[in-house]
Length: 372
Image (cartoon, rainbow, N blue to C red):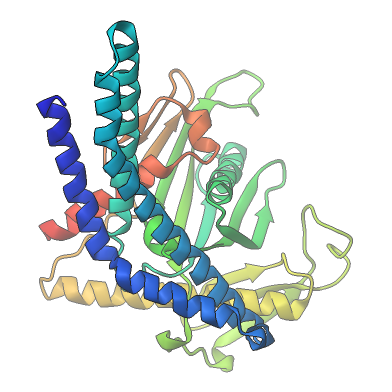
């Protein structure tokens, strides 16, 4: 085997060994056994929420364990790939070596992606994520752009088999959406998607302009951790104004027929949350309260971070600025303005192929934190 190939395999082995240590495979195996025991208990489904939490954690733990053990097996098989390739002759040897190189490149990408997951160690990183998307400057194009972004994230979640629950969609008059709120349900979703927070900019020929002029549109993405009972985010009833109204926009028979949509206004802060996608007023109120709690938790975290900054503890408050450009005309490119990561296939990105951006964002964030 060529020395460069052996050196590369040694580096991959070192990285994968670190991943295995961080994940603690023995503890992960023990946790899987424990969750399987809980899942086998027929009493589990008496509490639907707890049952879903157990089965979701079990599915994630099994996938994590299977993924890292498969990576180890593939890495252990690499020397055999090269031995078999080198045993060939002529053109057959060239083709076999090219196949082995291609597998090594794919394996490197998969191990690096797994390594990124081990960087999610923040206080709330392991939680589900609440995603808010709001259209910004750009009129009808911005509303259309906000809807394109929502589709991008939903498609990304679907590709990974993550659950998505839409709480609220406020449709714009002509096309697109003014705003949307949805939850992505899977372990470590907040840590994963939090690097997507900020202003997303689209440059394209406007489909809504009769003269075919180029238009720049903006949309804001906000990512919050789902609140758990341990967070102690208590909201006194007298601090919340509850308004009910009729749902609007596309929907089934129950839409526009009853006052089921709910708007919550947190009086002390002025934060407003709406939910209209559930069938009943009570369900909408429960969902809206979850989002309000998430927003208040984030507000509390920002205040704590600001207090630390005043004490000279550093911190980075600029993540929410313009962070990515999507250019469809006069050339094709999507570029992250923080990490410099870019691709020349916007259609794939807008169809949910954003793992490269997320991984580079997580690495960038970790580097920023280490430099503080």
